[in-house]
Length: 207
Ligand SMILES: [Zn+2]
Ligand SMILES: [Zn+2]
Image (cartoon, rainbow, N blue to C red; front, side, top):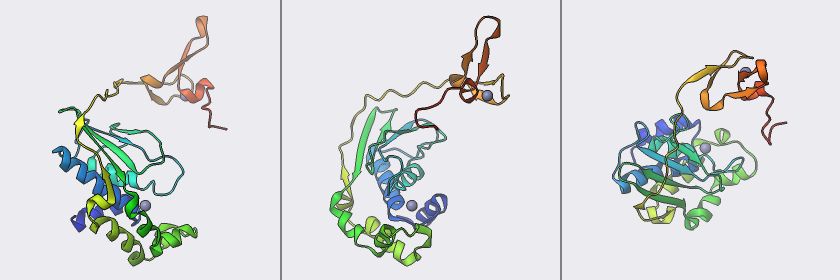
């Protein structure tokens, strides 16, 4: 892999770590196996299986950077399973491939100084670069089949989400909100189109 690409990804991600490097390698490999280029719009989708609030979630930034399937474009779909895994879907050819972190390399990574320090609670950006790079080199230079469980490229039955265009202005706070997120409150003469927060609705996880 080109060093320049790796460094650009680390710059985007914020620090040097093996999990984001693994995501980058896996993303590039998935593109190559599928015979497609990085997504410019929504010709590709990624279903990302990393979850919330767990270690090595950095994997997802490498995958986004490599594939161009990003949070902003809306072609990154989260299916939180706590796995360093994703499916790349090519909706032009209706083909998909799934890749997952291979447990074969896991112990070697766990024994690096970087991971022992991470385990002791040291944040990644406070760990010396050479120590972080030892684990990065391990995931980049080991044979790909030792690093990833590689699925077959197969037919895809994925249904791309439908996009609702347009914004409306919330009648309470005055902020523009995507139409799909507008809520109706009140009744009779007093119907208002408002944003979710002004509607009084609370998600289950919000306090
Ligand atoms: Zn990271
Ligand atoms: Zn509002």
